[in-house]
Length: 80
Image (cartoon, rainbow, N blue to C red; front, side, top):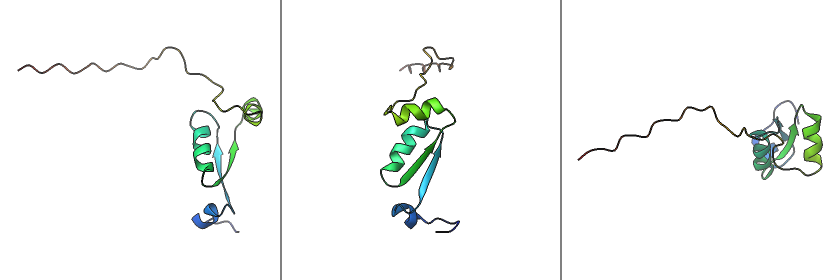
């Protein structure tokens, strides 16, 4: 296997897909890809790597309780 990897190499698991960041997006992506391909996950947080190595499956960080997202107004009810 050289510097190029084909889809056939990935399907045969002769090559791996790397997922960088194992948070809210990376971890589910790595899990989904691992159903079909070999996957290697990377994260800059040693604590996160240790949690995953110990069997944790949910992202370590939690969403904030309140959101600053602007709420869109509901459309007016059409009048007959």
